[in-house]
Length: 122
Image (tube, rainbow, N blue to C red):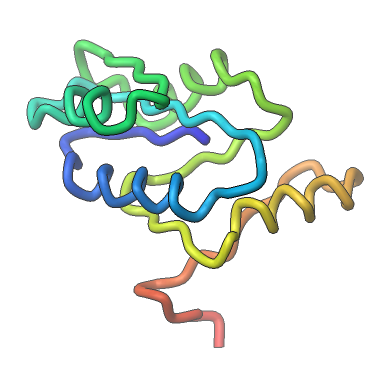
């Protein structure tokens, strides 16, 4: 998982907490690319989530460039791009990996996005 951050310390903490709480039974890595935050985001991640790989940019390189930095160092067979305001629930990562593993013909797989736990597609 790659999470791009810029001055979103508290919601990044919530995101990471949900990732580690809800992602059980699969191997995964989390890479946070920090785009020059001034809110101690990187220090929080390093102190509270030492298993996370942190790449700290001196300046804001932009969302796409930061994702590309993460993709370049990612070691997994899949890459999931997350926004720092994402909250993971309902074992969705494991379910998405299972889907991708059983649908090898798919080039891209994404998760359903809900707003505050409500499916807005209906």
